[in-house]
Image 1 (cartoon, rainbow, N blue to C red):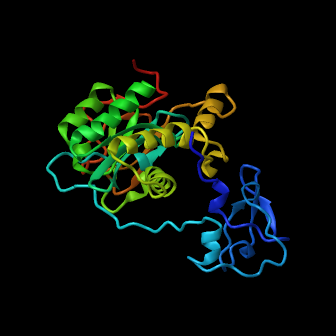
Image 2 (cartoon, rainbow, N blue to C red):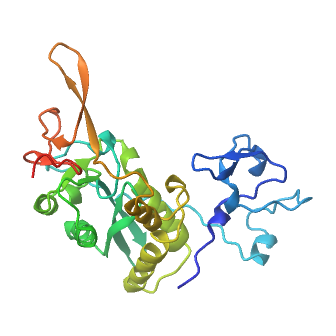
Image 3 (cartoon, rainbow, N blue to C red):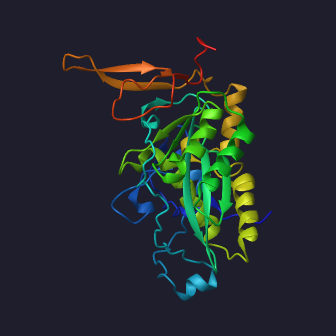
Length: 319
């Protein structure tokens, strides 16, 4: 297996004598702005950072001879390419993701599509993440943005996880996720669709973060002979590195695979089923919050839920 970039390379070293404290997970973090040389301190895990050598007051300039001698490479930001076509006639479903409080895996999946530039062509990658564990549960690579790309990633995720009916699938309002053939696969397995509102990407933030990590640590750092070469590298990055080795601060500095295993062994609170909150009007001009583990859809006349009532995970009152 090819060596992956050290995660500590993303952090600047902690200054000698800098103040540290404890994060929520008990790990030591640095609260001093001296670590970064800026006025805004960042919380940096001390076990991922080295201690700065005394007397090293100078910093090399970008692209300097020191960079070349140390074999350092600056990765530049690339121009953004739009992959979402939300101008369509298909149904747009209610945003359930922002209403959900997750307690376990396979309660909420998040899907997205990105482009990858090769020497002679563009190719497209569709990914699906479990929102609770951040694990990539399905992906597909193709030369087209046609719906078959997103469907292939979805079918891969279903085959890998075999989720129970009631799982919520969240995406943007793109054509690939709204078309009838994609929705038909969701309906076949009892998966409930959810879509972001316009200019509201926050519910897809985990997927966006994975794509950024993939491009920074794999795509931009390598050159590929063809799409099959790229496919093999992406598979290795996802299956061997990201899911099994890469640490996530939101998971207590554990990789997704380990986080899920500990959850299943009972080291984390047992899943009780996701709860969805709705705000409804009582008819007298007053709004009320309602928490439910069932999806009906009559409570929001401006959005369309999946046909018929479906159960969210953890509710066993109906079979």
